[in-house]
Amino acid sequence: MQKIGFSIVILILFCNLFTLKAQTNQDILGQTGDRLNTITTAVPFLLIAPDARSGAMGEIGAATPPDINSMHWNPAKYIFMDGDYGVTISYTPWMRKLINDINLAYVSGYYKFDKNQAIAGSLRYFTLGEIQFVGMTPDENLGTFSPTEFSIDVAYNRIFGDNFSFAIALRYIYSNLSGGATVGTGHAETKPGQSVAGDVAIFYKHDFKINKRDSRIAFGMDISNLGARITYSELGYRAFLPTNLRIGPSFTYNIDDFNAITVAFDLNKLLVPTPPLYAFDSITEEYVIAEGMDPDRSVVNALFTSFWDAPGGFKEELREVIFSGGIEYDYSKQFFIRAGYFNEHKTKGNRKFATFGVGVRYNIFDLSFSYLVPFEQHHPLENVLRFTMTFDFFKPQNKPK
Image 1: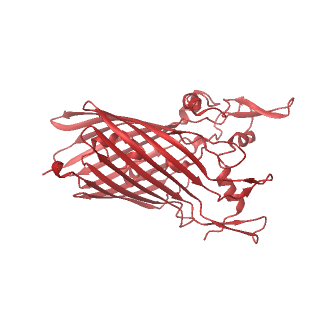
Image 2: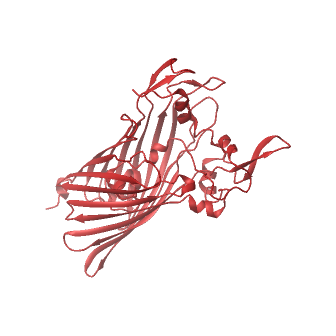
Image 3: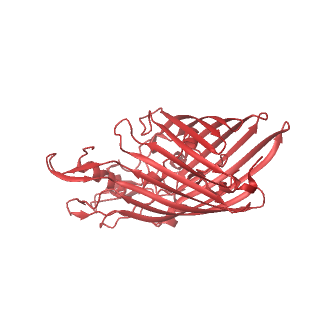
């Protein structure tokens, strides 16, 4: 059991809810150069890469070759799966260097009705381990609690023509971080956060030949976690979900009958308000917005204004785009070697790391592993090996010879 102070638990719970007021500690008008201005949202566990394959390729997946974990990356890819139905299980230890009972479990599956339509679903379960609440002094024991979060989603995927597909998904989100604890000077009661969100995704592929060898280019786009804001207390403030835009291309080249290589890139941007800069008004004796936009706006409004609301202007907007890329070597569709790189600007979180991994496939069974090496700062997955186990099946009439 991990003994963590009550104040730390409350910080975890409310760090995203009071972003508006927290920005008043930033220095004033004109200080938009290289200052830290990260975007925070509720339920960030929805953005954690759940599987080892994409995790080994720099956490990409908008246009990579379809696999059963496409529910997280781009559900429009399922109709192009080679199999007819399948299931996958992933396990990711979290912050293993500090604590041993925080982890992410992920189960995903799909079923193709025919050549034109498919459905898919997944369950994501994130546990923060057991926490002991304490009062003003370490000797004041207020009991223990195990914070948990999970999401359940289902998607429908349909093909249009031979190369283009579209998918929509619906997601239920549940986040219980405090177990109903009473916090703050006003003794506000907390409660589990709940919300419903949706995804919209497209995928396009084009097959052609280079030097008489089969090749493919593909493009994918996914807008995920677009839904109602979430609250954890009676205070009424509702935090944004991590609505995310993911786009990217991929290129696959079959070197010969046994060897193939895939290169892919992803661009990610959160479609939520960027915290503005505040300045103290000596007349009203209140903090007012000096640069940027009021973050208290509707989800639909934020979806569009998130492209121009940064207090640092267009330069800061570009910094909010996360770039990641990866490569996969495939030998006879049985053995895979993967690598990738993830880059986030230093003023937006400064996550920079390389990823590596391998995979093996035999008949319907696939097992993948990934490993992460951080560059700029420590990472929750540092020195952690995560894995994904997959079973992909064919209907009897479609089973390849």
